[in-house]
Structure formats: C-alpha cells, structure tokens
Image (cartoon, rainbow, N blue to C red):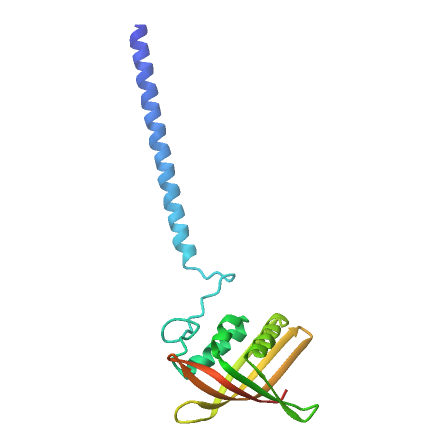
Length: 192
C-alpha cells in the first residue's frame, strides 16, 4: 500500500511537473509572440534620434570620387571641406601646385606651393567648427577641361558668434596624372 501510494505520489509529481513544463513552454511561446509583434511594430516606426541615411552619392555609391572626372575633383573638394579631411584634400593637389590670391591690404598678388597649401588648409580645418562649401555654376571651361572658373559660396563657422561668408570664383588649372584629375594652379577670385 505504501508502494502504491508512493507510485501514485510519484505519478502525480510527474504529471504536475509535465503540466508545469507545458505551462512554462506556453509562457515562453507567448513571450516570443509578443516580442516578435512588438519588434515588427516598432521596426516600422521612424526613430527621431536616428534619421534616415543620406543616399545622395555619386554614381558608384560613394561620397568620394575616384577623380577620373573633373566633377569628381569638385565633389572631393566639397567632401574634404565638409568633413575636414586633409587626406582627401591632399589627393586633389598636384605636386607642382601653386595658389595665388590678391592681398588687398598690400595691393599685390601673393602665391604659395603645395606644402604651404596643406599647412593652411590643415589650420583652417583645425580652427573651425564647420565649413559649408557650395559649388555654383561653371562660369567657363576649356574644351579639354584643363581650365575651369567656377563660382562658390563658403561659410566658415569659427564659433556661433564668428561666422565668415565668402563668395567668389575659383580659377583652376587641372592636370591629369595617372588617369586622375588634380589641381595644378588655383587663382582665388573671392571677395575675401
């Protein structure tokens, strides 16, 4: 009789354990269904803290160009200024580069080479909070694309109370080296 009661007790415990296990499995299944439903619902919502990715890229899907086109020079120039990237900027500048600008205080034209250009650009990138460069229309271009005059607008934000606006034109002489366009000469025709 004790053996029979023990068997009944044991069978009861096994039955109770199986029932609890089924209940636990149902709880897990319900939890999975609820989480799946929530993830589908939430996944379709727009997160205001994670705006959509900007998909305005060039034809090969990159924000930077391979410099095989003249337009790629202007695209990479803008990218370099926007992201303050001296590596990308340096790829635009030929080894025999010359920058010329008019010093209005002295009334003379001044020039510098590639090394000074990279130092000046590095200083600009390091000492500004933001650079916004907008390329406007091409004013003139030679048939072989080696001479281009293009207008631009540049906003230089040093801090919220020190913002400089520069409008003007770049007068560029481009050269193709190893299949890539580079800037050989830049004559600044801005209002600065």
